[in-house]
Length: 346
Ligand code: AMP
Ligand code: TRP
Image (cartoon, rainbow, N blue to C red):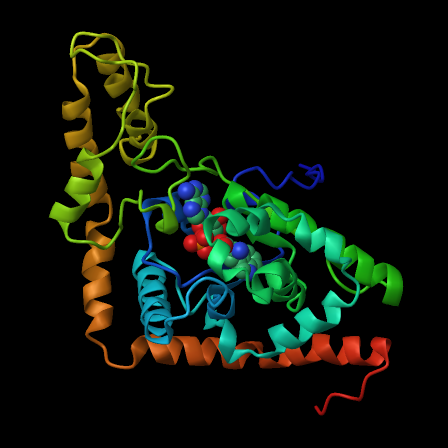
């Protein structure tokens, strides 16, 4: 039997089944892991480590744009790494490291910034949003944030970037930056593709906005079960379902949407109960809380085990950064050569 060559799959398809390539993604240590991180990004990280050459980074340099408490950044970096490992990120298959352990990222950001018109970064949606949300602290690093993000990805010549939809504009800018550098200095960098899964934007407990640490509308992954239960019970459901006997609209109700992922075998039945008002919002929330707690129970146990191994997380991060050194230096070597800078010692 002959096999027909398959065309390259568009990046929006199942992250686990894309043609092999290098993967890079980053998460800020600006809080603790939540359900939005997991559904939008982390489960893709874990799926992609199986078949791809995957590199995942805790981007502590990026966190400096909004958090100026060093102790908190250090703690959150540790917690984020511990959480990813507990959720199934396997350091034997994927590289996990801390951004500031590979300072070449910041050098590449500087080199790339020389091909980036200021207007490109000024119009970045995240910069405009920070202008509104932290008007007292519009620091320069906020402006250059997407250039550092481009450098994170480009330094390893990564092809795929699994992220939530909120990162789409950053990824588009990364592609433009890489293209501008290649046009000036000759083709070298890979234009990376964003990889979105089937839950690219998870709404928070307010039912309206994206789940986000800064909005305080999260469902935590590793909090105590009673905290998770409280967070789920506080969720806003279908705002037009006023009385218990009113029919619900599962398509708009965020609780029903989350059941899709946490009750995959019976969400249709749960939706039917809502539509016919056989079940009330409170019942559906209670069930969701049980399901979320059960879903992450094993990861919670694994997190506890790993946290009892002194030095384990630090060792994983250190070894990850060390493995990446040759790659990072090679890229900088090519840049130095083409851009007319001094040679990089090998
Ligand atoms: P951050 O915590 O902003 O560094 O985000 C880490 C990863 O989680 C990024 O890929 C985000 O796009 C993703 N993410 C964060 N919040 C959500 C959300 N509410 N829905 C989907 N993806 C998300
Ligand atoms: N901007 C991303 C976020 O806020 C974090 C990030 C930094 C990132 N560098 C990256 C994501 C490189 C993907 C690839 O979530």
